[in-house]
Length: 179
Image (cartoon, rainbow, N blue to C red):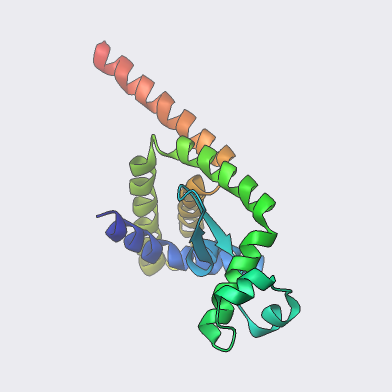
């Protein structure tokens, strides 16, 4: 079920991410979909590793213990050695990223499904407005809202903002039910 939701969110967000990529002239919005993820040593988090290329591999110095583990004559062995050396070299940066992910996961776990549902609604409305209204102000607003809800899972300040808004809405609805 969760996998289907992720696929649907990816399909819904892809037009908006493509347009944002064109505006920013980078593939940054697609980072979640393109970069290779690797589980951390404790298995509790995931980190993004840079993509393998022969030019990057040739520039990198690979430790002898890693060379001994992998067959560097084959591309798969080079990729595995590249990933392992990259993980080892950037361990202190990755630890900070893991800590950030843990904080973000604790923030997003409370209202995760509400935000996913909201992103799906905004994305669907964006696609409908793109089809029926072509390029209008409403289309760009829905694009921005879709991307903003996507950022809930990526940045702590946006997650905190969403959580406070959702709490305020819950408090208002509880007051109306009580009275």
